[in-house]
Amino acid sequence: MAAPTASSTSPEQATASPTIPSSASPSASPSPALPTPPDLANTVGDAPAGLSNTAIDRARHRVHEHGNYYGYYGFRTQTVPDARLSLLPRELFQGNRILDLGCNAGKLTLEVLNHLGATRSRGVDIDAHLISQAEAATNGEQVEWVLADFMEESYEFGEWDVIMLLSITKWLHLHHGDEGMRKLFRRLFEVLPKGGVLLVEPQERENYASAARKNKNLRPAYKLIQMWPPFEEELKAVGFTLENCIEREEGGFSRPLMIWRKPL
Ligand SMILES: C[S@@+](CC[C@H](N)C(=O)[O-])C[C@H]1O[C@@H](n2cnc3c(N)ncnc32)[C@H](O)[C@@H]1O
Image (cartoon, rainbow, N blue to C red; front, side, top):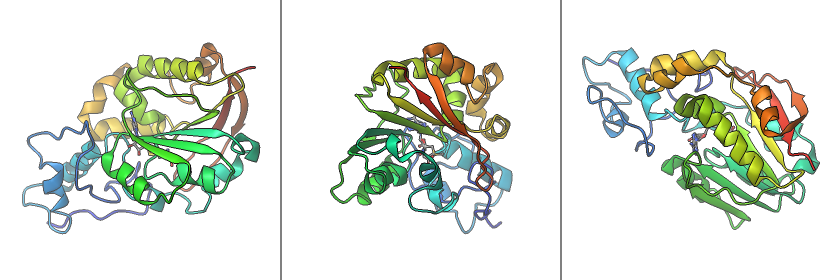
């Protein structure tokens, strides 16, 4: 049986992931009934007999259960700088320190430095392979890479002028529930200086169900969710003010870009 090939839809909608990782993310925990990720990686061209496409698809979704897609930028508009960054006012980045939470392979983390005048940036990701890709793409810029789960209490954010939370809220929400999201918003508000900015690109509510269907680990939190993107009420409740909301459509992605500011 041939394994499914990557489709041209976005990774969050596709039945197959763009690239099969050679190692699991720190918390990926495949079911014993399915091959471990390395075994799966060896089956790209020829999946073992008896494994249905649905089983392979679900195993892949468990490996990518944090949205830790490899080859992600092949599925977004491939402009430099990224189309989302180009839509935002340059003043947000110029001369500022930028924290990119869920940086994937670091494309945007580097672009804020190399194209938008930021002075320093840090990319944080939970996936070791993605952080090593980011490191490999770095050439002496004022950037640091951190392999961490920033939802852990022990993670120290440090002080930044702008924090980016782009195309990641669904994964955080499905792992940590409403309370986890409220706690994250409170922490981000606390660490930002007055006048600091939180950029949020929330994923669509409609995409949650499919992620939970494909990965049983995400179902318990999904069933309990009561607050939904774009989290306006919750972000206002912790003290942020909404400076701008740019509605946009990018291929299969229909997500607003929201600029939230901590008042002076
Ligand atoms: C769908 S990608 C979006 C990448 C990038 N922010 C962008 O919009 O271009 C989400 C990224 O967040 C990372 N991620 C998810 N949960 C995380 C967590 N708790 N801590 C650190 N990184 C996380 C994933 O590994 C993945 O690289």
